[in-house]
Amino acid sequence: MSLSRAWNAYDAYLFDIDGTLLHAKDAVHYFSFCHVLTNVAGRPVDILGLPVQGKIDPGILRDAFAREGVAEEVWRPQLPQLLDDMAAHVEVNAGDFRIEVLPGVRETLEHRRGRGALLGLGTGNLERIGWAKLKACGLRELFDFGGFSNGYEHRGEMIAAAAAQARSLSGPDAAVLVVGDTPGDIAAAHFAGLEVMAVATGIFAAEELQGADLVVGNLAELRP
Ligand SMILES: [Mg+2]
Image (cartoon, rainbow, N blue to C red; front, side, top):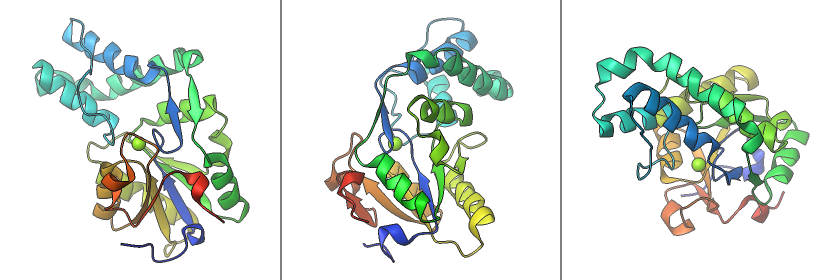
């Protein structure tokens, strides 16, 4: 597959966060899951071993509750509060973030932004958690808007909503490119009828991302 135009000729971009823009080398986000899972279950619960790459936060919670045998009728009515509690836990512990911005990220964002492109997020993070990470590493001000996982359990629906947000800001015919690091990002983009560029900066090698319309080792390889 290939992109329908040059990577830097899209009107709007939807960037995944973890593994695409940055690596959080801490467990701040991880502990926010454990915090709310433990509170609901009444015993220590973690998310070790659960697939989280390319997943979205409410879906990870749902899978964790299922693994623990916590009934849906117990946790689902509390979900809005649980998501708030997760976000608050991250914000309180934001001083513990150890975030590495990935190669070429800042330059790529500044390049597209400087030429009038709309920059957005298309991330499985909850809104307050995603912004907290970007603030912690100085990328927040480069983004115009964000599509987050609040209200979604399916990544494709989340990305479709983020693209709708991009088009409401940039125009109904705006060309939108998704940028992500997992097969989940690729599947979600294609579910939403969007093109996708994959970066092999997460846990997946370029060979595992061949379903994307363009695969690069990292964003520093892109030449404006
Ligand atoms: Mg990712």
